[in-house]
Length: 125
Image 1 (cartoon, one colour):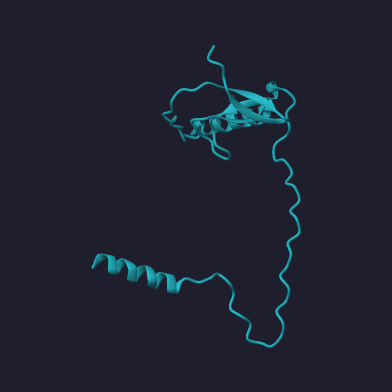
Image 2 (cartoon, one colour):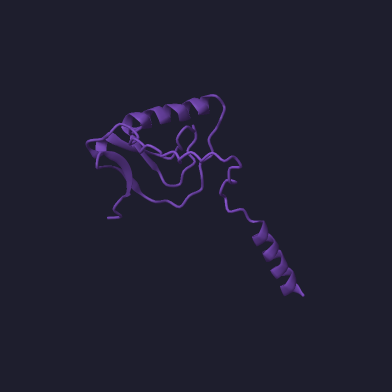
């Protein structure tokens, strides 16, 4: 009985499923050719490029937030890290205390890799 009910539901759903194609035109005019999309231009980098590891810093604050909420740090240019730190201080002053997340302690260090800041695991030695 249960198998028959499951089979009936499956058939009903399969019969109602749409192919996702538009309905055919009812006019006798030929359909216009599909528009071809122009290739997207490469996006401009939203962060400045780094030259050495000291150009980068790590933060636990998500982009656009003012409280540290990340367990794994994100790498940012050093000047952005200063702005993030200023935001955190401003939130604390405006009585929006930040609660630190409870995360497993891991050690990271900032690195400049191919002109972009990244976080790499620090050597345990």
